[in-house]
Length: 110
Image (cartoon, rainbow, N blue to C red):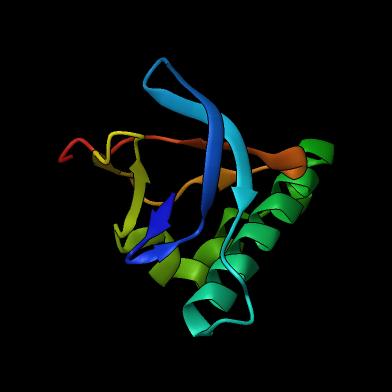
């Protein structure tokens, strides 16, 4: 999985069901390597924490909390790169969960 030109992580056991992709995510980006890597690591950590709160009690997880990551979520720079090198643009951003699960949808434009 790639954000702009930064490899973020590896997704294993990926499969698609009902136009949503699922897999097991392993972060490879080093948050100490630079500002982009730190922002991505912060986003992944926040996403995991937010989804845990949403699972426990939906009232404690406000979607507006993602606004601070608007550049990461809305800019369309996420890609899933297949083993053959084909890059599929991810709609908005992947969704990360505790235990390494990740989901995403491919953008209609590519």
